[in-house]
Length: 251
Image (cartoon, rainbow, N blue to C red; front, side):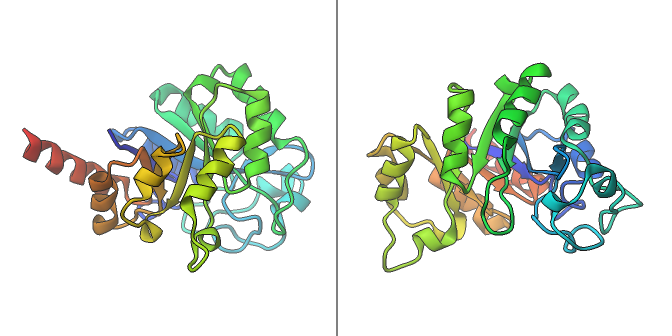
C-alpha cells in the first residue's frame, strides 16, 4: 500500500506550513502530514521550510539567527495575518487527528546542522507521546544517523538530493548501500527522477523506495503505479481522488 503524505500541509491548496494548512490537512484521509523544522537562535523549534525568510514569510534574514520572539511576529505570506508557528503549536493542531507525522529536520543555509536539534526534537516528541507516530526525514544523512542513535526504532527516510542522481554518475544502488550502512532503511527520490528498475535496485539492498514531489496527477498516478512506500504531495486532495478512483477500478 502506498501512503500519501500531505506536503507542508498541502502547499498547493493552502499556504505551506501554516496553521490553516495543518488544520485542513488534519481532516483529510491522508496517512502522513509532512512539515519542516528549524531552530531559532534562542533554541525554539520553528516550523518553516526555507532557512531564510522572504519566500513564504515576510521580512528577511536567516531563521537560525533570529530569536523566537521575532520569528513569532513574522507574517506568513498569503494568510490572514498568521505568523510562523512553533513546533509545539503544530503538534497541538495535529495531535488529536491521529495522523502520522513526517518531520523533516532542516539545516542552515550553508548545510550546517543546528546544534542539538535532533535531541531536542526527539525529547519533545517523547514528552508528548508522539514519537511512535513519527517518521523522520532529512537530506542530511548525519542528521538521520544522530536521530537513530537517539531513537533507534523510529522510522527514518533519507531524501536524496537531485544532484546525487544526476547523470552520468547516477547510482541508486550505491546510495541505498550508504543508507543501509547508516541504519536508514528507506530513501525517497524526486518522482521526476525515477527510472524503471529503481525499486528492484533498492530491494536488492534491503532498502525501501519512496518518492517526493508528486504534485500533479501524472506524478501521483506514477507513484501509485510504481508501488512505492509513500510519496509527498502538495495536492493531497488530488492524491485522495486518484486513490479512490484506483480503488473503484480494482473492485
